[in-house]
Image (cartoon, rainbow, N blue to C red; front, side, top):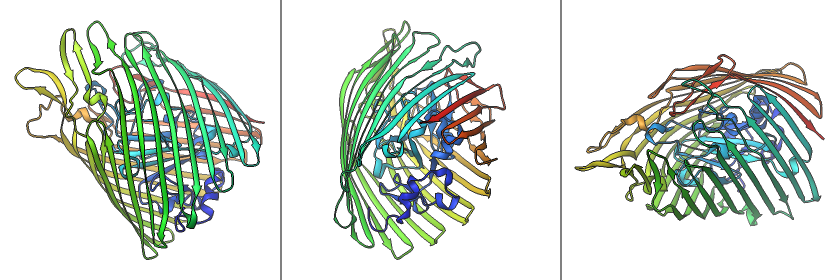
Length: 627
């Protein structure tokens, strides 16, 4: 870490129980997503929201998508017990137009979990035991300079706790009207500098009702197990972690779908002279989906990244590095009576390499300028540059003003280039071997202030300008086959704001709002098929209000009210919903809680996919033990 990156207490605060931190202390919690270097949240020149361990525990959330509802700079919409639409700043896709959320990069301890097959995330395949999450950093806006392709509209970085922080035993058992779950974990030490933990968990979620009426038959369950090993010989640190899972998902009109996978991640940090740091990370990830008659895939990903950060002078530091990722896949085609969805070829090995450099320059005691560039070489479109520039001004110890401009890309995928859809013998839709990366140039202005010891606020304005977005084009003269083009462009502009207020020792409020306006149009000569609605069915606004009451040292009541604006096309009405949780710590080792979700309506609709469910009211009783 460079000498000026963070105050000495910041790392201690990052390791502390966030439940005990004041709003003033939370501003100094360390984050790493904005600059790939540890820095206090108060100095991060970006719209970043941190979901802490305490936030997760008090929400009653057990899945990652439920946890991400806590971030005001995300759009999170559920369509079935296991299917979610999650994005930032719009463009959440329109499945009826074969368009999906594919512009959000998601990391779990540095391991990218987006699928290179279509650039989106299979949320049913991502899971972390809530007990093991240290924090979730949610950065809205482009992050391509540091994180590469697909960090177009934002980056979600899920950071887990070290094995040394989860010593002893932990167990949980819960059940409700829609789900049941169980988890068991144990952590220990093999030596003074060698800690470990192992865990296993399982759950089952009951089926919802279809929007059209009747049982959707889409209940699902997924056992998962894993481990983490932390070794700190001398000043070095080495982490090795892995997970295995296998799930079965009900399908309304066909046989059940199976999902399975595993991963193994190794991370090494080595301090160098004068505060410099060398980091090396490697991971292997395996994923498989299969639904007989409906197709599936197997995917193996191998990734290696190296990063070096060092100080050139007291006022200047650099972070640079590079990496290489190999993704090997095989597609199982969907073959139904009326249509077939094929890939030509059905198997490939994709290689994506990158180099990046970011320079941090102190212009006096209060101003910092940051400039960076990433060059990413993907197999379909070659080298794509992704530059960025940021400037921040610490007006005083409690006030930060920042501005940024950045450029990011969504690289072509097999779904853009190789896909073929047939209706009987008729080739109806094809990929495009000349498909270009989808591009965004973002302009941002932000303010973050600690107005008092008990009140903080963050505000950012943005204008994201897009070009070469995917469209559906027609073949001249014959019309069919249709093919993917790059003839959509436009912008999304708006604001994101949130605040925290410690009203009293026993009462804390948090509020957030985001508003955006989309303005898209076709290039001259485009077919204009399906209109601009194919890019996404996004709400104009979202707002939430969260309250935490500490009735006694052992009893808390948490409520979370959210308002989601109407979706324009396909139309979904605006809705307001309430989640609540009552927690009682019976002893230092035992806690019980009762949670309720979507309490204002028996069921409601959140997003239209063609096979969407109504999201029901639910209750969940959970007991947690430590031993």
